[in-house]
Image (cartoon, rainbow, N blue to C red; front, side, top):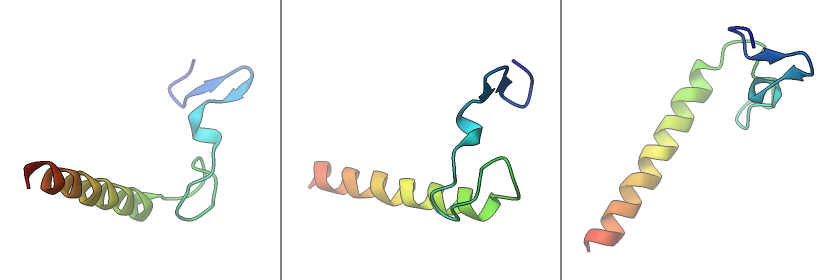
Amino acid sequence: MSSKGKLNAGYLELGFFCTYCNRPRTKGNHERCSKARQQEFARRNEDVHQITSA
């Protein structure tokens, strides 16, 4: 495997499409998508902690 996550059979997880912009994850800048994904995870994680601590 190379440093870009390739195998002879093709890309690993990098070949899938981004759930936020619907573009391949190997193309373009997904910084905004990553930030949105991190914020969503933080919100979900915060909601779980509020439910369990209440």
